[in-house]
Amino acid sequence: MYELDLSSIGGFLVAMWDVASGVMRLDPEVFTTVMNTPGAGWIALAIAFVAGISDMVGQSVVLFANRVSPRRFWFSVVASALVLIVSIFFYAFSIWLIVKFVFFLPGRFRIILILVALSYAPIVFSFASLLPYMGNFIYQAVRIWSLLALVVGVRAIAGAVFWQGVLACLLGWLFIQFVVHMPFLKIKAVDAWLWRVMTGTRERLDTQMLADRLAEQRGKLLRGKKS
Amino acid sequence: MALISGFFDTIFCLLGLGLLLFLIAGFFAPLQSMKWWAGWTDHGLEPEENTAQLLELLPEPNTEAEHFVVYLTGIGGFSGDYLADREIEFLDRLKNEFGDKILLVRDVFPFSVSNNPLNGEGMFKGMWDWVHTQQLANPMHASTFLICARNALQVAVSGDPRYGPLNNYGVAREVAISLLRQGYPVGSGKPITLIGYSGGGQISIGITRYLHKAFAAPVRIIGLGGVMSNDSGFEVVDHLYQVIGGKDFFPKTGVVLYPLRWPIVRNSHWNKARHEGRVTTINPGDDVYHVGGEDYFSNDGKLPNGQSFMDKILEIVTDILNGNVEKYAVGSRE
Image (cartoon, rainbow over all chains, first blue to last red; front, side, top):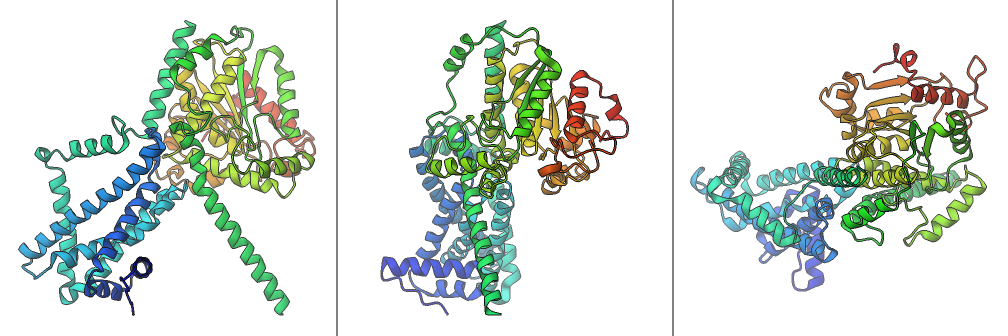
């Protein structure tokens, strides 16, 4: 049984902890409690925000590799968490469209949004993917965990139409992928623009490319000087 | 009964605490090289102008040397200045074997991107000073476990495709500077030989790619019980001679821990090098172990013919440097 006290900041933080740990334990009751508590949607979004920060910290090698300053580093971490919240909105909206216009079921956008945001709770541990060697496994594991949380959430709120709910999540994801890859929407350009704004660097390069490029440059310089 | 139970509780508590500290250290392990690359540290990656200035200060090329050998120590290493006595003896004898014909680099600390010793900076400087004092007094002192744990994490950083390129570039840069300071003739295309002991094996394969790009020269590796991941360095390494003692199971950890080294993944960097015949495994003796009294540098450990393990390793390395490798290729090519 979850008692969510949202009347103070301390209560909100305790509620966040209770809800996040409930989702991580894959407890269906936590989903229904949040859905039925007025104002608890903010808890779901706050959890997703923390998950976004943790996820970016876990993948921060890309920021270090592209030599962002410490100030830009933290700005990028927070900004990417906000971008994650926006992407959750889009995902929830696409699921709502599928529920409404493919399955003709009475789905409410607010419920779907909370469900999707809550399912990101296991991503709170994504910072652990910083670990060398094990990090890659952790990165995948928290995503699988998050997917399981989504399925448990669907089961908790969809009841008799569970399979339609799971299918709606899958189709919603496919729909997002389809939209993202529409050439005229120029999502890649938007992504590149976001990167430039967040990091202050021109383009996102991977570590292998950066190290290769530098070694080649220095090698040419070296051989040019001595020849 | 309560005493025994309390004893085990304490043991498990300490083990748990140790594991937790190791995990915390793991989170910070990649940050050293990442912060260095990003320019967040005092001795970060230098701009190109400084490289040009450095080149002006280099000595005349050493035209007499035929062998350019870099020794990279194992995870017991503390700094570029410190090597265990048995390693020093091995390298001195190798130097005596070839005289002026060999240029031997032994001052690069493989587990730091900037050749910074463990006690070089940071809030743990005092702790590392103390550990090193113990290490100098007794190389097998229990506290040296901290050095091994810290350096093992750096081996994991080097072998991780996310962090490895930046970390390995940094170490390759230090090796390149040391080679140049000792007179490696740039543009000569003379082969560079890396001898990597234990965790130094991973660093060797990690830096191969960048040394190859910088010097446009072939790079070969002699791994002494070397632990290696499926590093992209296998794409360019001229040849890997992996010397593995009969009782040394440490190199196998690389095979177990990195699935891309499993034979089933035919297109991995490692398997391509194997199929192209660029990997040779040499067994120096059935009783040779990774560390301790019967390791690769042991004078006490003897082969059935009476030859010491140290002499055998010296013979193998000398043969490889002199190109007498056919006898090792028979039946041992991977």
